View 1 (cartoon, rainbow, N blue to C red):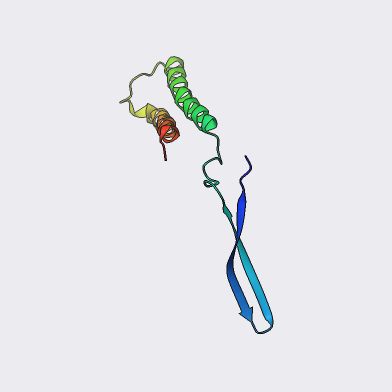
View 2 (view 1 turned 45 degrees about the horizontal axis):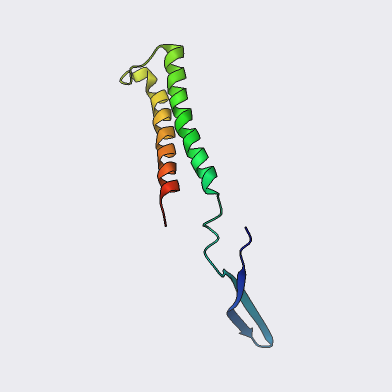
Length: 99
């Protein structure tokens, strides 16, 4: 997407016979941050994190026959799953949120 920009004079520096004009570019409509990362890509990445967390938990449970979340030896696995789920759910909320 191409954004139209407006050139504005921002600052004029004068020192003796030396003059420097500094210009600033500003977008005419909207901000450039709105379309920096497509909404579908955010949604896909969030869903991938959630699905990846569930598959990782399921595969670990099948391989090591350990479904007890209160067992201290499996804390690392469950912490990874919780972080992946948290980022996936947070990404879904941020994707659905309106400005």
